[in-house]
Length: 294
Length: 141
Image (cartoon, rainbow over all chains, first blue to last red; front, side, top):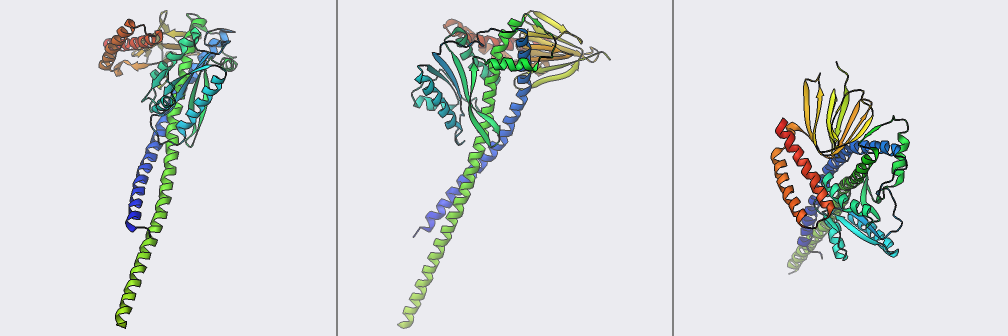
């Protein structure tokens, strides 16, 4: 027979856990909103950036710049893996790490070396465990990424690409589709895909002739690295919003499960209590009957 | 009322300023440039320094510290894309000074070691930003 006190203890423990998961769910809900606002307020810069880039691209027809050129040979690629610092967010980090692993093994099969830049404690500890030493590690930024963080990451990639020691760069992050849906994605940072430039050119066919100072080439030279920084920044922010979204979903599921568990446990607690009472009555009745007979 | 142009100062994190103004004076890599309404379409590279706007019949002026960035003029609309920008009266000078000291130390360290050029570049950009903030705050705060 299940012990009454044991069941009681489990109920208490489960409802304590539920209290925690419910709180985490609410905190995540509040944080999603803030993270979304941050993405929104970054939009004007990104849009204006693309506009300027388009104007320049249109002017410098067939622009050539080290960051636009594809390297003939692929020897070394860099992957920026964006995870969170904290857990309790479902498959958020494992999706990213699995995708990173896929890239490593795919490129590895072709004899390409892969360097990883880890963002978030989860990526760091996973890679160390796997025996991969990341070439860059960024902790405590996943909650509230700043543009300066993105710039530091970009500074680890861009010079290498221009000099030819790096042949491609990708960022792996969770894209924030909506509050309930995040998707792990790979985005190519370098070389800057020519379609980015072409699309920007399309949009701006009607705009007038611009004057560039010092020259269009000089503007382009400065603009392209900033464009890469903007892409990384966007990845970091989307990941921050996705993290909260994933955590909210995971914690909601945990809260619901805890509720179900409490219902089941309460039912067996009541059954056990009922059984104990029935047993006692039977004993009393039995005892009384024995006395009467005597 | 004089003809105006729309000035927007945007950083990756937010829109810092947007207003109808009469003149924008910005620090480009080739020297200061003043932009009035009906300016020819222009794209230019900015360096860290002071940006000011005049409005209300040139009676009011507002000063900003900006780190490097870009400026685009198109049909009486000026977009300033800066990595960092702050209104002169809102600059935290003490913080900027502390940051400057710290960055100078780091810069000295980086010079000693055979550190990556990239690290030095990042450090220098930050340093220029701090200096721009201090300069603008001291002059206009």
